[in-house]
Image 1 (cartoon, rainbow, N blue to C red):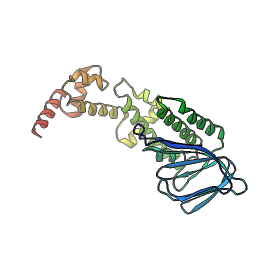
Image 2: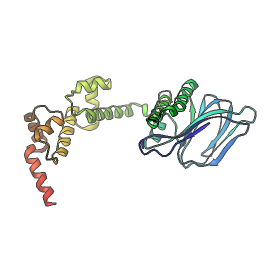
Image 3: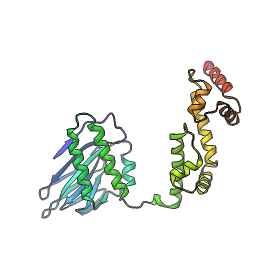
Image 4: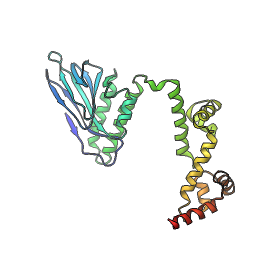
Length: 278
């Protein structure tokens, strides 16, 4: 059984291209060939070989293999104990990054995952998605995300888990939190609680890497967003103030002038004059 799908115009970050299940005949093989999308096979039973990148792998139940776009690969079912596998074909801007988090790359294409019940469950959800007259593509994409999230959660510990990269990820989480929530009344304490770290430790870690405090980063992010809004004539200074998390326009103007050196009103006038001159 195999299901194919057209190129997705809606889900460019990640989308299914095909999926299927096959009980292979002895020595059933595909390739050598290249694909234009990712193909992840998971072995439900039996054995076979997979070849890619000059390497050959003997694989069995509970293992899988990743076929990477534009890389020659070959796979063949065992002559005595041929494999049964399911597979997911997919592509998108996030595909490589998500696979890497699961420990799967061109140079490390073998999957070790002993939860075939989970894989089977998600395969069934994909099959059942055909019953949805509307929203089937979005549902399939959601199931694909869930499948990859399981592989990531149960995947190998990567070099990113060292102390330095953990610190970098915490900093990125702070920046991401601010980017999403800067319009709200948020505090450093709330950010630390969300990330799950001691406030003092997180502040120290952030300042070491960003050369500014979390509070200063938040303020500068808000003011920069306010500057972007200044070109929209329909927005008053009060509208802009509230849109970047300041309920008090006077406080906003004071902070704006401290950061930019001029008041929001003068900044807007100067920006408008520069626009006319250009």
